[in-house]
Length: 162
Image 1 (tube, rainbow, N blue to C red):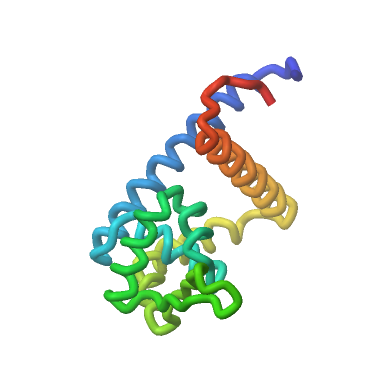
Image 2: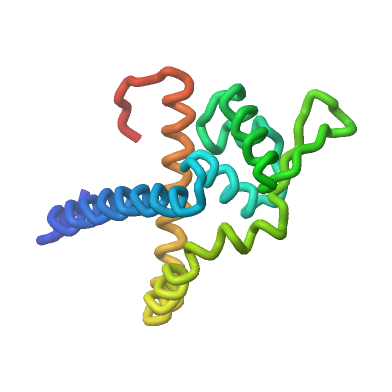
């Protein structure tokens, strides 16, 4: 650990800013879901499908941290609302492949358009190196979140230092 003056304070500020950004992101997601008449879990599912194109119901369950039963109900609801198609995998009839209907994707993006424009303007002032640093940071944070989710799913609540 470095003993540079101000480092501990800067790290504290970074952690506080990260927590506040995470909190505001969650509040924003709830507002978007409400605007669209969806639950946050519905929105997370649709957002995930928009990113990957198609996924199995099991993959949706893993990424949304929902039980398979909850995902089955959610997918049925989203299918009835016309957001997704769900088809049995011809190679494994037990597996359900879910796809976001492309004609509904624009509807889901609309509430984010202004935010995305503002975010793009924000990063325009960053150097390529600064953007690369942010990408590395987010990639590492995502890996940490996934590892912690795995740990929580496995029932491991013990504190361990990395």
